[in-house]
Image: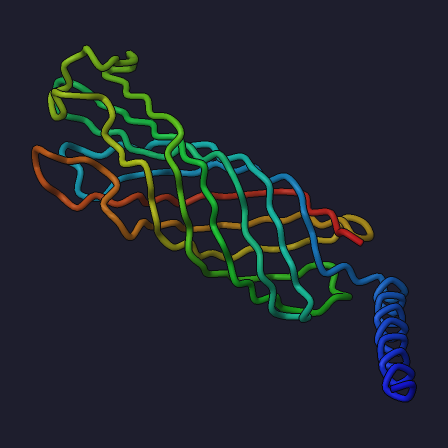
Length: 223
């Protein structure tokens, strides 16, 4: 029994010392595998298969991003952000704009070019994205509408968009080292929904979220 206890104690002590040695080696090398920081973005949004003549709808995006890359080339991460989306369409006599606001969480698998010592690291990414609608506002000819207003296409309610959205996001970008453990993170990304995002009772079309967006943020390495 004493031999078993001594052997067990030696294994625990050895594991502890090895973990500390690995952590110290990581600190000495200056490599920080996890980065966290604010992200902002702007882009264009549309909804597929909507009636009328489509207009460009400029939408903002703000949140926080996280990247974990223990491997020199492969990493994992995502964002949690407030995302304005929706569409604007010309119906002839009227222009209708709908602005759903989502709590958006894209998850990503990253591939980084270069290595930990590179000051500029190109990257590509791909992954799913999930959204929960927080709010929705409609405008007719620039004037905000209420549920009591009569919309030409949706006469019963101004609540067009469904509560949940699921899709995929893909893109490419650059990480530029600004200082030790501080990176300027720039992405050009495309998001597309998988599910019908609009309660289109009149035309019964399959309408999915689509947006192309440029994001920029500052990511800080965590010890």
